[in-house]
Length: 412
Image 1: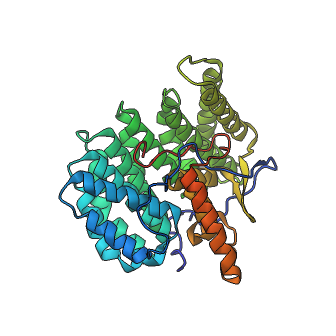
Image 2 (image 1 turned 90 degrees about the vertical axis):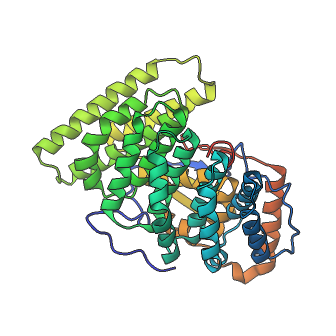
Image 3 (image 1 turned 135 degrees about the vertical axis):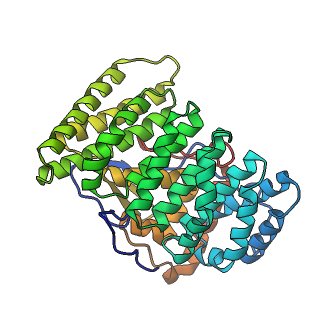
């Protein structure tokens, strides 16, 4: 996998591990979601080649009926979640791009949303490759228009901005491009549609996680602080969490810059004002009891607020340790917490398979993949067990304040 280009204008690559600022650790030995990718109705035999499956799916995506195209897109989403297929996608990139483009431009909102989901999953599969940059260049204009179009269905706008953000996160190494998308996401905060707010806050959080601490502390904290504080009042749990994660990231960055004496007197004062406002807001929210929220949601939100307050007050940051089989992945700091949460939302239960085999996740979270070639029989056996678990719809424990995954055709 080719290396990412050198950072320009202070951009922090998602490949580099964040600083460790706290010794506190929580452990999640097994994890998935309450809603998983269901392979129980998978129509293909086990011995069917991926090439043949993709060909059949592309044929289905060319059908005249939108419902038929959407059905094929759902199968493609399941495939891209369950397996790591960079070579297969690259080999069919022209057909893939043409098919997805037609479906994204379809009149049915469900078809558009599902096409966006398949496009984002293709990026997670391919990683930092030239082909991923091609996908960004091909779809950037269309997705930007959809995200900004107030006449579009809220689910379409959410899917468009989230897909655009993940393509940028994986393929683009340019600060100006990232800041431009952050501006688009921020402008979407004016919407009252929970779906739009969820997508915009999620996209903004992921994009901010790739920027350097100085950029976040001196440029974005003063601009994003006030609108993010307003989002903390949202009745949507996901919007609250997205905004909270981003505020945690901004606080962590400000602490690092302040400790390094990189802030001038005015910047230091601005940061202090934002920190005080955040602490006051979180204090208010923790004392408010919402009867409309489930008990688990309340507990999750309170745990997240406490984590953010710790970052603002003493500089400590969240640390998680995720174990999948014999692979241990350390999620240290707000940037990696955000990136891991986004990966889980996209990949669903497939996150386990991708953690074991996807070079992109290995690079982002700085761990080594196992050499599966040493024991192909065991790898094959484990893969069959994994597929069996998927088909039964097993679920596991969700770590506190980590995004819950949702069904591709329900909440993407």
